[in-house]
Length: 117
Image (cartoon, rainbow, N blue to C red; front, side, top):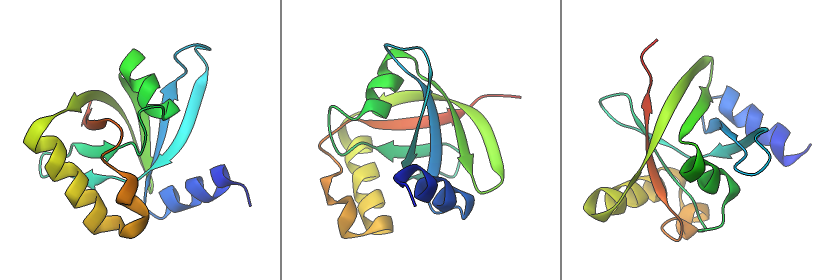
């Protein structure tokens, strides 16, 4: 099973978010499975483990993305978060996902806000 297939399956179970961004160079759709924390307002917090994570660089270039979690699909706008909000997001993601998430904090952190339908 490929990493993409595993990511899609985990997103189908609601364990991760399946993120579709627009390639910053190619303009083509690019996908990634990312850990997330859902906030009380419905927004999602996501964090990259590296400054060079393609999905994060894509969001910097074009912040609109399509997110699938379980059977819920929607368009979101990404905004990078900093300071205390960033630190809180990293801690929450590590607590949710455990040690494999320990690289979080080395890359950008985003708040994904759902677009109105």
